[in-house]
Image 1 (cartoon, rainbow, N blue to C red):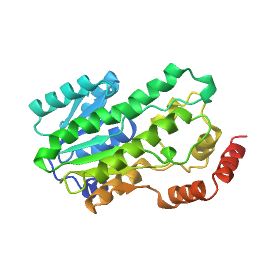
Image 2 (image 1 turned 90 degrees about the horizontal axis):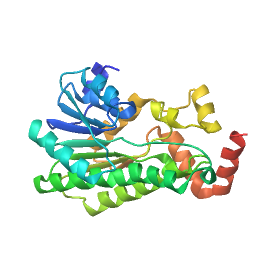
Image 3 (image 1 turned 90 degrees about the vertical axis):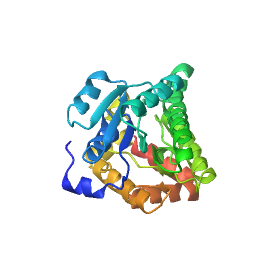
Length: 267
């Protein structure tokens, strides 16, 4: 998808170099193509062919293969980016995986792998870049948590657990480092219409219905809301307000009722 006038005007980025994890597809790819009109963009991913495809779409995009669950790879990749492009002014952390099946059908090894990529990957990326930004007292860190970390669902147990951890980690980082000069934003979107949903090998019925009924959030809308929020100094957002806020309210008011609704939707 090419960036358009609306996307370009909505960007709240004021730096010169941006890094986007998971930049070969989905929200990462869209964010990279938006930012490329005004900055040098480094995209990180493991999908070599998709990385090169996105890099070929704009001269300002550079591809770097990196496994975010490996701390040393993250450190070395960030160092290489700064050597080749300059100091990193923004990191948008999108990379994640979302396998789906009942927890009892997943091996402990498979569940822990999701945690290594989604949660430990977040710690590796955010911890590495914050250490670089803090002395400069400037920079943006945007982390994609998820509404799924608050509103749980069958068949997505491992994903929900990782996103709950990501949400908690990022919220604490925000509150411990307010006033540091580094803008940290946690974005907790609902299900978004991106290729991430295709990873669900036994796709939950509620996601299939949401896609059929065109209830999935639009990627462009999520990016627009992020840019508005970070420019306004917001710290935690739930894009597509009515959907996320309603589910959060129901989760707190009557979790059993929410589970009943979700489980009956899946029948």
